[in-house]
Length: 358
Image (cartoon, rainbow, N blue to C red; front, side, top):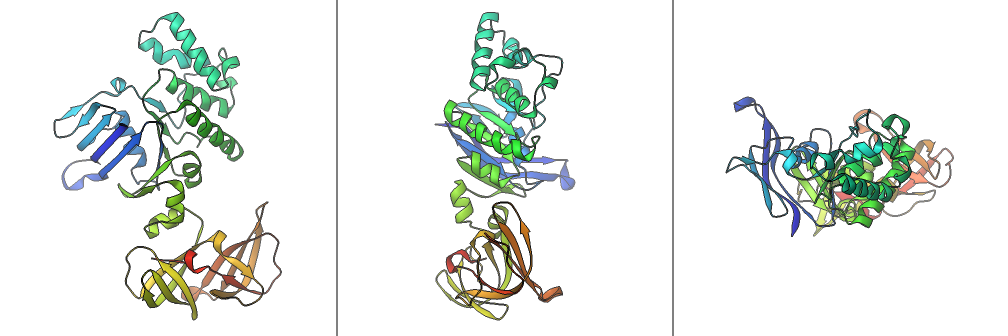
């Protein structure tokens, strides 16, 4: 049984011809113990979908079910208030009460539910211990680090054992180093506690690291969904391919097709690639992940020769930019190298199965 089911959800702002459609028939589900990431660019509808599930936005049509409970049904004009949905919600800003201690922030929801004082103390102590906050119960939010504040917000969402926890950009307020640590902590916590979580993020690396399944939204619709590995390695569309990684995009012309094998001409060079999607036009877009391009000082197959423009040091590797021409005829490629390259021309090998044609 699904912990959360959304079916054909429509939501817009405004009325009549001037209405701005945000969600255009979105359907999704969340299984028990599963983490689903809502990923997409700004304005794609991911935060609106999360808020609709939480009861903070009112859709125009569709249904939302939490377990066996129907919490929204557009056809029946039924909408359950947010406070009755029993969902845990972690806001982007954490939204902690500044005048309340960590203990009181976490206990607040239980007090609203009229739970007994001794039961509240036991439950709050338990959840603070689970999140490594047991020694910080008497501190105030301003006395905590950003990572600790984030964990308090998560503790507050978990304290009454909600069937689903909703996370709205939960790591965006942390600096880069702390984000990596918090990402690992959050994934470990979700797995250890067997949580069912729906998380909004615009960071594809974050989505891949934490989630079991990704829903990529584009202009109010689901562009593609699947496991992080399938989304990254086998994208169905150019939008998915470009959003899910760091890429080189090249202009190309199709010379011949044989099933999904494609013979191309890029910058006058014959190359082999693999077709993704259903584009049958002669003018196509070819794309390859930056990490898949191999740099060679000598001529190799399925490669283009380009001069080195510059190399940038990234710590564990160098990112090198190769470029020729200018204006409309400009051709550039990025590739990684373990060492800084000397000036000159190089052959950039692109494996046929990694050179995607859309």
